[in-house]
Image 1 (cartoon, rainbow, N blue to C red):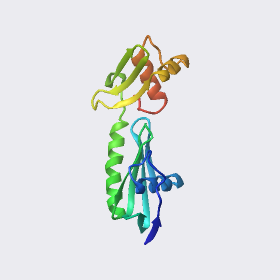
Image 2 (image 1 turned 90 degrees about the vertical axis):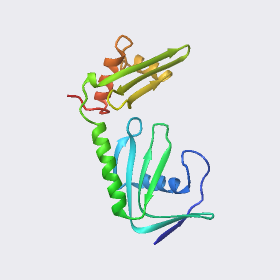
Image 3 (image 1 turned 120 degrees about the vertical axis):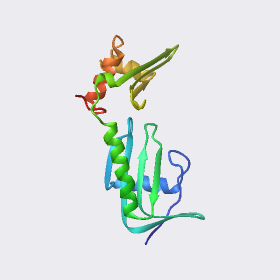
Length: 173
């Protein structure tokens, strides 16, 4: 068994010490990964040939595999599993979910949500079926995307859809 004594660096993007340690491990390289933080979320599968024990103060974690994820706000979460097989089984479910997320989508499978109020702006492309956000922009990001020619205020929906296809956030027919 590999034992790691870890001192947490402080509050931030991690909910606990094991998340922070697994983040460091994921930066070295995950055994498998999928997704992208700004849309579906980034996920990584970490497999450890020996059982790992992470200790901080009076708390200990034991595991042989973990699935880690980072969202668009940069928050990082981890689930640990007692066996490699258990981690791989959970990974298969995430792969299926990601496959569904990437299904070929026509523009008619999406909808645009816009919101403008005083100095606040929001443009969001959503999947109609799941109601999940495909991509969104807030405030200055909206202005920047318009200035760069990616978003067209005369056609928010068409330009946001085109951007999502060009950046492989969805697959187009």
